[in-house]
Length: 134
Image (cartoon, rainbow, N blue to C red; front, side, top):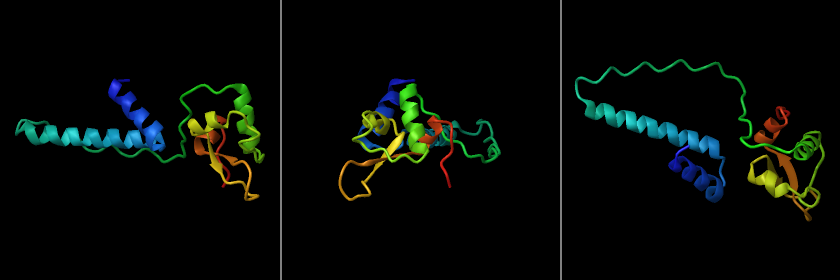
């Protein structure tokens, strides 16, 4: 990866707290489109013809797998959450590690007070090889 890609990923992940891959992909596609348009506008009459757009692949639900290794004990916690366990930040020592890697989201405690409850995100479900119910 280039330094610019790493810088963009760090900016999106650390400061904006948004889903990095989707935003990065959208920005890269926009940049590629802009570069192509800019080059074609300045290429003149001898420019090759614009290629026809590729047909869209068949839609299938695909969730990106996490790009980092997950320890077996951490996978067990994610599997317990998937099975309906309502783990809280007080019960899961590594909840910040999960949240920073977008595997879980924190919801307010249903009791109205107390530690926040962990909920699996799409990447969390993908990490254990399952699809979210519903």
